[in-house]
Image (cartoon, rainbow, N blue to C red; front, side, top):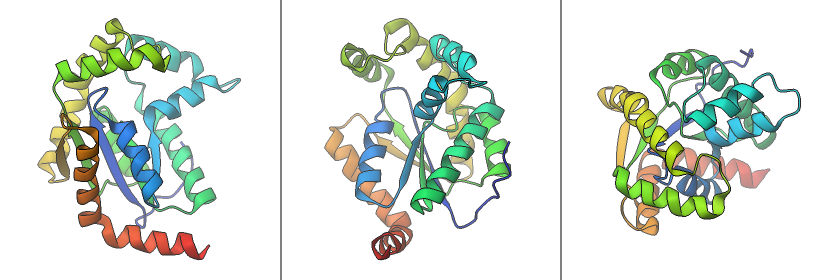
Length: 213
């Protein structure tokens, strides 16, 4: 684990939902329209897997094929490094973490190392809808985890391991639940309304800093 210090000035938003719920799609739109750094846990892991000589490469490959989640020390360490790099290079202070934390063991380690989330955005969508989306995505995505056998493992992982994380934060009154079955444009507008209502001042402040630079 690195020596990056926790920063109370950072605004951290976890984005959770089943595979295919639209976490990456809507996160990338928010990052394009606001001074937000979007980090996908899946992308962070896949990038690390491709790095020559990475100590985590083989473990990440195995985890992806089995549809399971990596050990907390690995995932939090990689995410911490990615956040620090974004902050240093782009000066952003609002982080949208797509697909993290996926298991309850990640929560305590992340909060003690980096900080606590201001909000957990839960994109809620039934499994049958998500399965159809993923099968269609798999026709063009080229991702090894977009096939029916791994999709089913990912659903099982989400239900048994990630839903308890959502319920944990719901008990702390941090969860905002969005109906992700709607048309994508409507879902995005719903998310925008929540973001601007809760973080409007921070987003405007960051935008002004970004413009002045």
